[in-house]
Length: 197
Image (cartoon, rainbow, N blue to C red; front, side, top):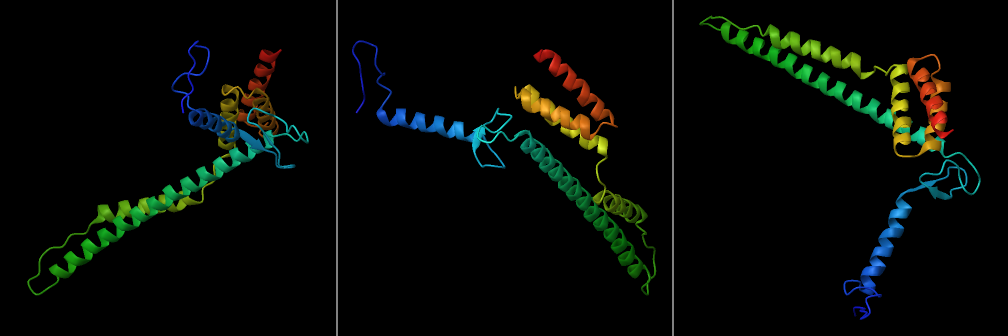
């Protein structure tokens, strides 16, 4: 079962044919995981490729769509946080109203007494509810979106995906030219081009 070689030049005792095949299969799987699919022709390209090897279509567009998907996920997350704040606020407010109502009913009975108005819980709950309500439909500022895209382009540059980073910086500089994010992207673009020579 195991292959051995007395002269030391062959596979070691630990390299069974099954193990060698398994390692090769893992290598093929790892290579496939790092592939980008072209939107135009469907060919799989290396992860570092800036253009499709089949049709020449730019693959940087996929990175922009990934950034927009991340932005949409962040919007959904912000909406979820706002809705949780609304729920907690409503519960605090309703709890305060219930405490006030129950103590009032107990105090208004034949024996009389005092009752508690839970103003703190009612007001706190109302404030939290309305903060959540206004934050639920709040859209991020254009500059914030530009800086999110800039962070993604910087990540590409740090991963060594220089051509994709150049394309992303260029797109940000064009799309957000009137913002600080656009100006920062232009500076990063010029700096990266100077490094490349």
